[in-house]
Amino acid sequence: MLQLLILFSVAVTVGTNTPDKVTTDHLRVLDSLLKQYDRRATPTNHKNEPTNVTCELYIRSFGSINPTTMDYQVDLYLRQEWKDGRLQHPNITSPLDLNDPHLVQAIWKPEVYFPNAKDAEFQFVTVPNVLVRISRWQHPLYA
Image (cartoon, rainbow, N blue to C red; front, side, top):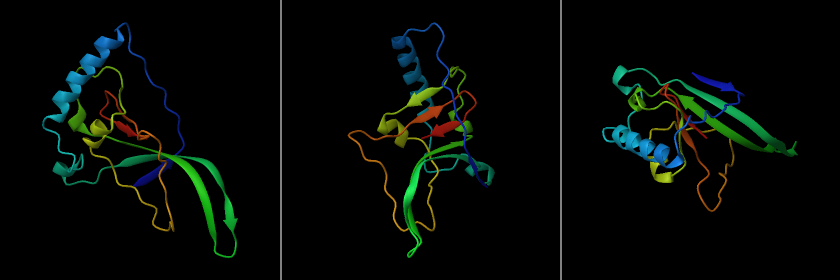
């Protein structure tokens, strides 16, 4: 089931740890999580159940409406969240933000499509504009 929600999330800051210690600890946690992780399998593949994904959609603009062809353009932000028990680790006490494309590629992500779209484009910038946030509740957020 696909749910569309408009929500806001707040990043939790790490307590008294220094940035270097947090980065080193986070890298160790990620290394241990990704050793046996198979990104080709859905998080609930072993249970033979569908994976529920919550989608957050923020419409930035809606325009260029053509009444003759029934076409229009929409600029939007899409965020997805799901539960993945494979990313559980006792040392995750605050969200881990992954924006390195190689780390983002190592984690399973849902494939989203818009069935009635005539054309779609992703924002291309000098670096990939993606973020995966892993919380201690095993809920990756992909934006």
